[in-house]
Image 1 (spheres, each protein chain N blue to C red):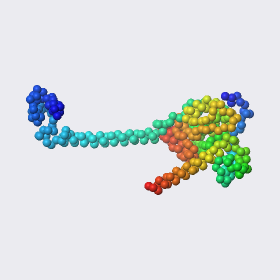
Image 2 (cartoon, one colour):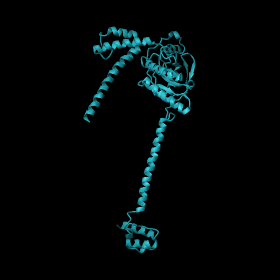
Image 3 (cartoon, rainbow over the protein chains, first blue to last red):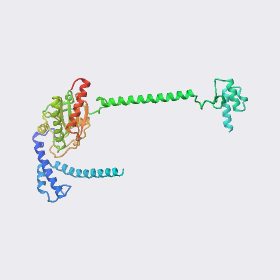
Image 4 (cartoon, rainbow over the protein chains, first blue to last red):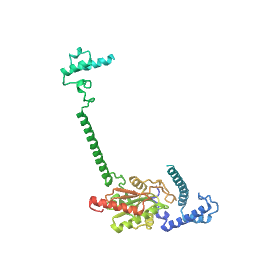
Length: 96
Length: 270
């Protein structure tokens, strides 16, 4: 319970709208590069996207980067699952 | 067979006590009974002079049975209809079947003023829980609240009070909240407090959040939390929870409908 006594100088300032925008843009660029390299999981691309990765890591907090990277994988899985369920429902309709 | 006939005769005996003992054959006995005790009948089906009856039913009884059946059928159908109508009315009414969301709390605004659940009264409130280090969902939802407010205030003026409650009190100090909210609609009120108060407020609003009680104020972590925008009416009662998929237009339409119903019930808008 130490935060009640902390002085305000210890605080890391909240990201502003500009900060967030910058982070999101660098993320999109990095992910675009990953897409082009055919890599889904961030970090598995080798040196292919090092430039955009550097910018991404400079613009976003580590916790955000982890979150976005995980979500990218999850979203891809979800896309697969949705496509699959769509296919299945089409098949069922065809049989009826 | 012998058991059956003894039961048979015993029942006959009960019809005409004292005399049926002499009876040897049932049909004689029946006739005998009929003459001695006309008020009581043990059997009617075997009687040859009642050829027109079927079982225990006379045409009259059958007619009565059918009439009662039909009557009951229509009566129950009517009752069921009435019940359904009543339920429909209850569903449409705002006050019945409302979720028990919300409760007492006292937190501090980003302007360093106390703010309690009493301050929700007399306004239409949008209550949202989040944290300032939120990567994308919270800012998007706060922007959504902002655009809903801009649209509603054009028609209704300032009947609304948007409230942003932090689920990350370790890092979201009053000054942090103040800085953060400068990016959003100017009327959004940021609330924070100590961990226990935030936790009990979240519990009252059925909000889940994952911040540990001993979170490092300087740590770089995210908070997993429920992302609903709650609409609370001017009596401080829960009306609706809007998820991420609700568009600003949908929210505006819903709020307008709620305000007009509230006005119909109470004669005032807040």
